[in-house]
Amino acid sequence: MSNTKKALTPTPTVKINAGGLNVDLIYTATGKVARASHNADRHTALNGKTVGDALATRLVNAADIKYDVAKGFITLVPAS
Image (cartoon, rainbow, N blue to C red; front, side):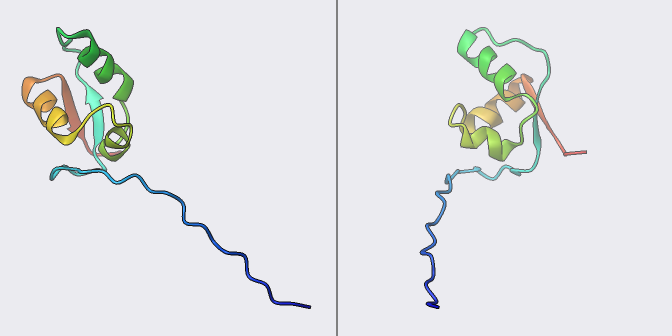
């Protein structure tokens, strides 16, 4: 019997820049609708995802999330 080891290939990880945001918070749309349709669509599409998952989609970056919170389009709530 030979002891051959399978070479493990690392799974690619998506590097995200959280910009100081807690990646475990939940991205929650407030119902306030953005004038730009691509922004409104993004708020709907990312609703309920963690900040980390939202950033990993590349639909949004940390600055976008901070802006959306400041303007009242979304809130970041702790996971329950």
